[in-house]
Image (cartoon, rainbow, N blue to C red; front, side):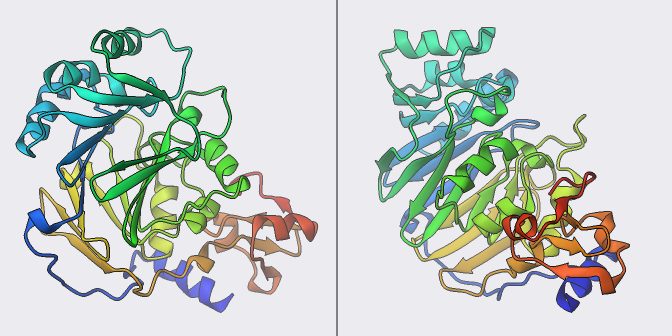
Length: 351
C-alpha cells in the first residue's frame, strides 16, 4: 500500500517517469522492418495503416474530408492495393473516407462486423465493396489473417449485438515475432469486459486506446490485462469531447506508460523487426524504444483499493482513494477478490 500511496503522490504533483528501462537501438533501414504500423493523423477519428513484406492492411479511414490525404499517404508508402481493409464499426469518424480510398486504391478483402446501421457513409461503403468484388468477411473471434511476416487475429466483439455501435467495434491483435499491438477501434468497457471474461489473451506491447482515450474504454482492469509498454491515442486537437479524458491519462501516468497522441504529435509510426520496437512521431522528437524481454510497468498499481470502513472498493485513481485514511486501506488483487470479500463498487468511479 505504501507503493500505491507514493505513486498517487507522484501523480498528483504531475511528476511521472517511465517505469521501463529505455535504450536506443537501430533496427536498420526501414526496408528491414518486418512490420510497420502507421497511426495516421485524421483529426477526431481513427486510421491505421500496416505494412509487412510489401502487403498492406488498412484499419478505418477517418472522416470523408481526410480521404485524399489518407489515399496520398498510402500511395507514398508504396501501396498499389490493400490486402485487407477492416472497418471497425459504422461511425463516420472511422469509415467516412473508406469508400473513396477503395475507389482510388482498391482492396482484396474487407472485414467488418455485420451492422444494422443505415447511414449514408455505411451503406455506400458496403455497396462499393460489393460492386468492386472485394471479398467480404464477417469478423469472427479467433479468425487469423497473415500479411507478409505478420498476422492479425480478431479478438472482439464477443457478442452479436450491442446497444451501442462502439461496443461492437472489431478489435484486432497484430503480432510480428515477439512484438504485438492491440488495436481497439472504439471498443468500450462493455466489450472489453466481455473479452477479459472470455479469457482472451489481450497482452500487447502497444495499445491503441479505444474511443479516442475516453474514460468509458480504458479501465484499470483492462490496462492490467493488456499490460502495454506504449499507448497510442488518436484524437483531434481541442476536440469537443475532451478526449483523451483525464481519468484515462491518470491511469496511464500511474504506471508510467509512455503515451503518444495524434492531436499533439501528428502521425505516429511504430516499426519492429519482431524483437525490437521503435516509435517515432511527426511533430516532435519524442520517441519510444523497447526490446522484447525488457522490464515492464508495475501494473499492480492499478489494483482496486478497498476501504474497510465503508466496505467500498475503488479504482486507484478515484478521489476516494486520495482522501482515504491510510489505516482503512485494504490491498486487493482484483475486482473479483473485492466482491468475494464483501466490498461493493464505489458509486462514483464504478471500478
